[in-house]
Length: 309
Ligand code: AMP
Ligand code: ZN
Ligand code: ZN
Image (cartoon, rainbow, N blue to C red; front, top):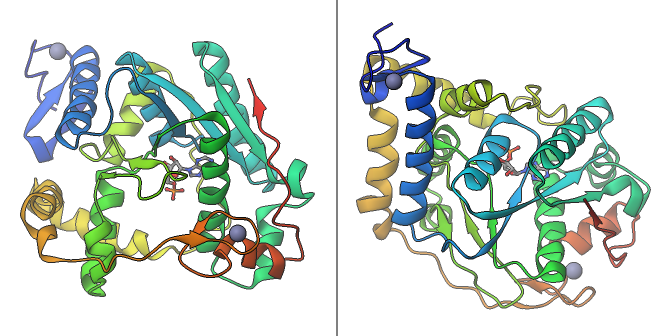
């Protein structure tokens, strides 16, 4: 491995895509600079804004939370405890320990406490694709916390690899609407909905994992037990083999799309109405969350019990 390009010190990571290597200190500096650059380039939020970080306990969202705090942002965490056995107890513990060690605020929503059931059971009863049910439920609950606690921005840990895989998938299916909406900063479209930002889009999985390891941040390495054979994995493998042969491919593809390609796709604007049951913004008469919960035999109108620590 080549030595740190800044100080010629012991290398902690070799970044082929950028043709550089860094020691521990200079890698951490590089990582934070990339997060800052993304926040500024895509105009994500200002330094005095309160940001709600969706934390799963995995390497990406834990690195994100730590980086935002290290950069001096006012970043609080929100974890949704899905009640999926050891996977969920482990994830939750990691978020709680991190919050306690940094003196950061963390909100927890537990499906078990609120609905007396868990995501595995909800997926089974709705007979739908697990990641789409889980995503709908998490987004809905996050929006309720956003409204209750007065946030205007939600940050997620999506990284360069996630976004590149999503872009390739959307292109292969010519998903024009998804392509138009794929962007690291989606402004709020309704008074009750937050802006959504992805500050890690300039950094890949290797980088977020290395950041956690070098900074001693604990994370859960296990994949979600419900997300079997996700198609994004096939795209990631394909892209990584291209990246191996042609370093820099990922960044060229993704940043080029955002700078030049995306403008060619348009999204038909939809009017948001109030859900006939819960009153939350929706494009349908009754929102997807309410329909899923009803299908699962659960009451969609239960008020979220937000635990704060
Ligand atoms: P994934 O789709 O699992 O890769 O997750 C994408 C992003 O969603 C993560 O980086 C987190 O920001 C957020 N997220 C995923 N699971 C949870 C959870 N259980 N609670 C809170 N945020 C989550
Ligand atoms: Zn160095
Ligand atoms: Zn509803």
